[in-house]
Length: 428
Image (tube, rainbow, N blue to C red):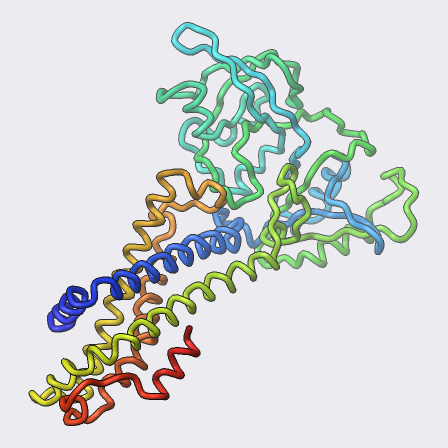
């Protein structure tokens, strides 16, 4: 590796402008590539944070003409208890406004606007809430709430939050009983952004709240099936046995139930504003992937073009090495290694660019987590990709500059052949 490094340093000193342009071009390309692939990884990894995600489905009902995932509570209850193949189920209300709450901090009252939503206690087992303080079972009690770590720190500072009181100043609770305040029963680790489960304050839904109201269609229903259960069979069984007349609707067509895997919801693009569901466009994701590789391809062409432009200048020194005994194979390996080194160094510089763009808030429009520690696998793959790109981009120039007889080059000046000039024109 030392001869390659020495060669790289020597070339950089002799051709500072050309090498600087090459490295900066590749670095910018790698920075764009890494950010785009982080976003794609974020989108493709929706719900991966839940160990049971492959067994979790959203319940929908409808006819051949339409389907809806907004359900009435008694309908949710009926479905969750309809089959032994359903291990657990929960209700969620997406239509909740922020509540104004107050807490005691350092002897003074502090106010906050926070999202408080309701669910069945089984949600903590289905989505594997990582409990940092207290107990996940606290939702069994009407006055207890689960609070995300970020909200707990905001409300109560760095000290313990369990047992602290949250006073409800405005908003509606759907818990067991009529409470003027709530008590923190547990603190859970914040979920990443790429899941439909939000970092809200969760309460357990009261047993009697809209229990028999078939027209109150305000809820989602997620169910977790037992390992090996067939979702289609579960849905068909309910469709055959349930009395849809209870819905008190007059739609045309025969009602049926369907189960949508929670991992598929994001790319269904059902909520463009992101208020009810987090959604993404699969066509846009494919376009971003195309753009990412197009940027890298352009950078490779640019590298090859500049390297080829340097050929008339470098051929003399390379052929001098041939006269002194270096073989074509050794020279080509050295030149390809040099190209790989340039590419890898550019990749590292690209990471520096991404870091400072994030630090200065210039990547706030990107939904993905740009933290390097959260994307180690992707960064390792990109590092290997940079070496492959260097090898590919340097392959033709390395063969080209070593393809001439030493005597021809040492006799005098040398310029690109007609073939070489045509290649540069095509690359440009």
